[in-house]
Length: 107
Image (cartoon, rainbow, N blue to C red; front, side, top):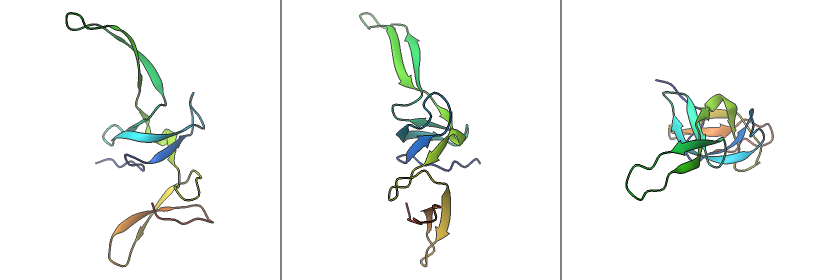
């Protein structure tokens, strides 16, 4: 069982590669592979062959999966990239917390 530090719907910033510094929303997480798909980033071109009569073929651009270690979560309150900490509340529920010194907000 592999764990990934980001969840679907999180806003993340890309740490390395051609899209370094750009922000986007996580569309899909694959913990088994340790990869994520970020909306509008890491675009790859794919050559598609028409499968049915009258269907259009050509070159399609789509988001490609990237390793989760290349992205870092962005805190919704302070807007800065942060590592994700975990904290237990009084009722026993586990929440994710911003690790920035001046923030500490739950998300």
